Length: 148
Image 1 (cartoon, rainbow, N blue to C red):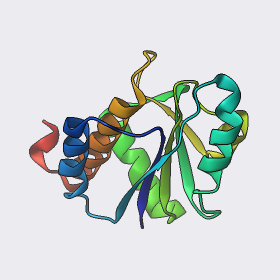
Image 2: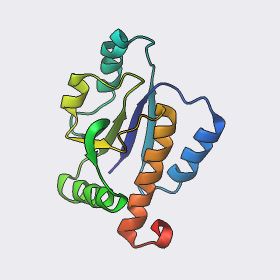
Image 3: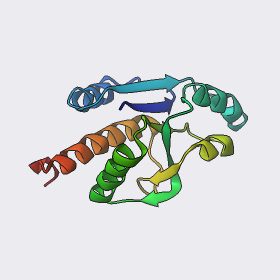
């Protein structure tokens, strides 16, 4: 199994990159972070859509981060993750849209929509939060005390 995070835009802050790398190096499965170029205007979402979807493999289980998605506790997220790994047995790809979100076509490609909050976060920071929660999910599933 492989975990991929596709994010629109580039992370420029070294402290965010360092935080992500600290979690990524501890992942038990191959992990890939893919950045796709963002567009400055809402109309550019169609261009971002193409860039996102060309990075997703047909067999991937896609989870889109969206405000209208399901809000889960860390434990429920870990169980969802475990269920996908056990029963879907597919690579998991997370998609984080740009400042305007993502298109209906990207949403339709996702098998699941996940919300971290009703609040809006900078997409660069959201990547760090997501990577930490993926790491936390693995720790929960192993019964490791990190979660406490």
